Image 1 (cartoon, rainbow, N blue to C red):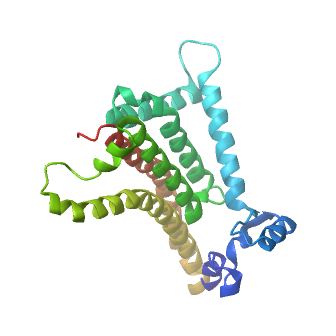
Image 2 (cartoon, rainbow, N blue to C red; image 1 turned 60 degrees about the vertical axis):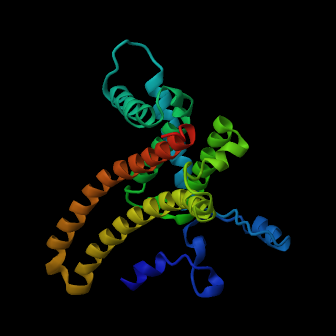
Length: 265
């Protein structure tokens, strides 16, 4: 068990941890050494998280391209499944939260959904790695969402009006001294909640599976049937979680975008 948690010890090496280099795939230490000489807080190590994100992006693009091209009026097999998922994202996530005016955000929200979904699913493959279980990955996605939210609000309301509309109107003026800091913190907490929720759910599922498998080594092979049965059940549940977390991330993103598009609501 201790060895498993040691592998997830991502503290910097200077603090007794392994850092993210434990997942290193391609050694770019010469480049990192040059960057450190410039005193820049950047690490270009290509680890498993980076490779899995590349694979997720490639698989998502390939399947979407495959589903959107080809002959035949009636989609079949994989094309039919991809079309059903895309229609779900379009109708039940984007249009439900943003209305018809939100169609321009469909590529962004749909891209987030499929990227997160395939990241989650590829992480369930043996010897794979779920990039979403790395907080730096989910924080970057959440940061992108925050930038799009602020850009959307400023574009549709104007730079001054957007910040004025952070607090609800009609309140006594002295109350705004309290409301604006609260609303600004609330704006920043939205992407924070997105990042932590996705990261925590994925990492917790992997740790539980590893823990169940470890029990049979700690208490003997007589516990193996129970450990394997529980681990298999949790693994199957993780497939459901992969879809659910992609849905939750994108539906909340759409809700936040809808608030920026329609502040009157």
